[in-house]
Image (cartoon, rainbow, N blue to C red):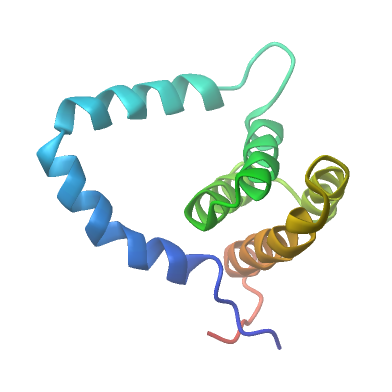
Length: 125
């Protein structure tokens, strides 16, 4: 069983930091939350799961572990599958080269952690 370190642990580490800054600049966070909801709402061409997988791929290219964890969780919640995640991550190798080959496995680990939890698969913490 895989020990996951790129999903919930990353988000748990970021939560108190985010909360502190959110208290200092609440209007900015409110605006960002509204943008987030608008961007991930199902549209005419893309559903929420696809949009979240795009965000995971961008997070890999940007090398943002917090974004990887957050959008992996969002993709799982929106109904994305492990196969869809792997396909999205394959594109990152083309667009991001060597660094993507390091961050894409982190993203897949995060996605699988949230997926397995969501679907009742036993995981090692």
